[in-house]
Image (cartoon, rainbow, N blue to C red):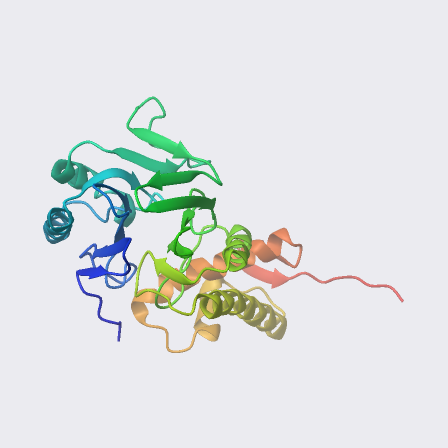
Length: 284
């Protein structure tokens, strides 16, 4: 059973979490959005889904109580549950800049719009009471960023790391690199894109890395045991125990990413019938 997350919670003197009120199989309790700073002008990190009246009402309540306005909206990545609430937030708050990393593969937002700022790895966003350093952490998506609140050594991990369970990703090689980047940041706390705050961040990051390595080993062991072409669906049925039905598709996506990583590394090959371990010739 998922941990209860209140609609509004003050996490520190600089951070208030406002739950996106959009629960679901992939969003868990809902998207976490964060109001950051201590002065009149604040930063909102992520904006939830579109047309969620309860979320907008709660955000308005927080802004009123804090006597604050949103100066910038930082978007961790392009997924709808993080970005599509932006028009509703702007309607509530008034005009503010949207700040995000440009999608290398397909950016839908125009760089000619002066209300949009595209970030670079290492950029720092300053607001009263908060300095936010941006790290490009692709893998979940190509444009994914994580953000460190320097005053508290707190990491906003987006969907790179979740408060509960594990995440999906577009590119496993990039994702593993990003996990190691985050590990080396040595954060004191993680505020994730979904799920509760993570108070033992190093253990969590190491678990994510070890979990992916273990999954890879399971896939290789299964392919070796079969010594014949198998599909990603067959692999999921054999290596995921007691997986809920609604998560089978996500598991299959992750297995396919593992297989593509192994293919790039020359360890597996495939055709229309499925995947098989490559035979490595050796000579005495």
